[in-house]
Image (cartoon, rainbow, N blue to C red; front, side, top):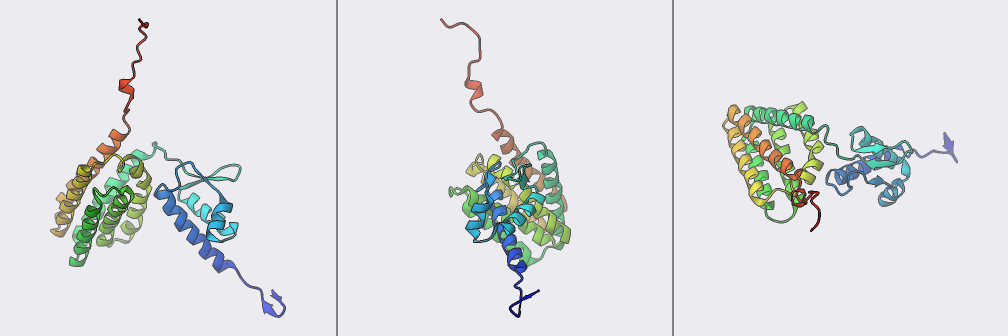
Length: 242
């Protein structure tokens, strides 16, 4: 359709770019707990922040809903999906299976450049330990983990392993990193150093063992974070007062 002899302007490309921009920004804020589980998403406020109409914001929220990061309520309001423990076992099983698979593929398909990149990422992770910036440490470890998938050069693992890592990011930020001392983080760095060495020499058995031990150490901290801290100090006896 034309108006005043000129084609009507199609705003679709700008809206689509806007939706992608909002999606990426909100996704990162959700995964890094800037937007806490259960918190509301105000479309008007978000649209104003990005200088967009509400339409691309709704599209971004729809995409996040498809990823399970946002829950759309019956009254059409949206909230950040609360964390649930009932799928944690499935997530941890998948994480271990994919980590072992990624590392085995990386061992078979490694290149000198790939190994050098992993060592550089490990150094970046190690440099954050003890610095007091929990998020920086978490993101550095995430980048190191993603590096294994890049070295593996398997199309499907390169796609699904980062998705698995992202699925566990909020759990780690809530139940691992706040409770992981510098010594526990340094242990993770040593595990990664040993894992990279195993990949470099194509030692598949060592890759499987180290990956299992590395994740087991993380799970130990997560389990400890869920234990009562003050309940044992509370006297629940019914003895009468003197």
